[in-house]
Length: 455
Image 1 (cartoon, rainbow, N blue to C red):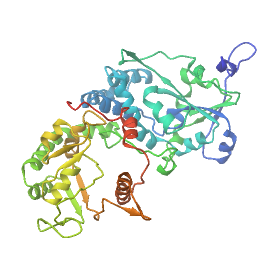
Image 2 (image 1 turned 90 degrees about the vertical axis):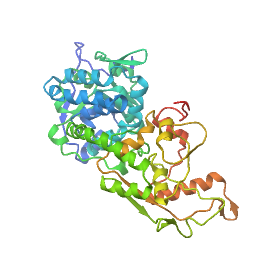
Image 3 (image 1 turned 120 degrees about the vertical axis):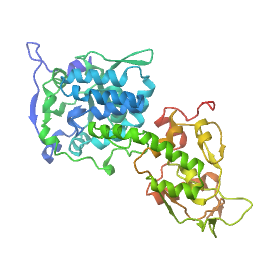
Image 4 (image 1 turned 30 degrees about the vertical axis):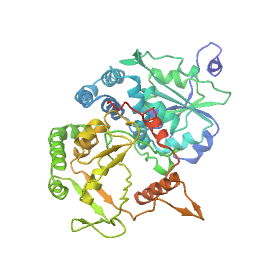
């Protein structure tokens, strides 16, 4: 095989140890020396700054599983700290993966984990990776299913090798497959000289020795040097992070996760109270009481004056009515627009679940089939009100025509829609892309966004 050609051997058929080089990765001489070579990258040791992989397993436990699964993992954390690394890993895999379908885990790996991985990338390690002719990512701890989408789509790696979790009929049984000495044989290398990059704290493990034995040189960063690494700035991401899906708005470290579970007993009754207030009370009263119980609402350029719809350009009496276009941050967008206008409006939407329709204080009008990136989309209201101090900003922009003429040519409907989206993005400080709704759902959920209307 091609891989065996690069396994350096002595005359006695015993593998030669690579040259070990301790480095800080902070000098330009290192960059020049490493150019145009094939790199075998220890992802946890040579790319990610944090030495802990617990937050990534917690994300899988909660986002692909449930809060109960996350609570079990959190309760086991003190025990995990006392166990050998391999046993700790096996237990986390059992808790997080057992019984989950491959589709659920793959969705979290594709739509949720990349954001947290990107925030954990060290700029120093990334600079080395960027100058390589070819990079093969090796994950000795994180299962391949968790890290492969991030490494291939956002880091540009061609080959990712990692631990595999056993499956039966499309569901994980929670057991890691045995380590294989021939992991890298699946990667087809050319004649380029190979080097390794990892962390000195994990290099002398059996698995690392087998992987790096393919290399002529291995560059190791000490844990002390890694603690000095700086995060990779967002404007230096190889590929911009456009789509992200997930309920947790923080990195679930053990301390942060404890705080979340301590807050949940208060959050559940509080979100029910806040929801009932918005459902049953007039909007002005609901907004006023909401501010007392922690819900902050701010309106900019309001079209309402003394409780009535005001003057031009926002709300002049018209037989054709008005269409308010929102950025659809959550399902509460049309509800808040209705509250700020102090009048009932109908929400024209692509996606509305039965539960959302039942609890919505405004009438909804369906367009096409029901759609969703996740089956719990109807819980948007509850997750928003579960925050300690949820805040909603509503800004009314200037009135825009539905028919536009540019350079004497009448614009098509999609051009008007794109212009409206561009103006909303400009106000929010975002840059518009050419990605379509279909592409969004394919990236986040792995489907085109059409769901059974009976759900």
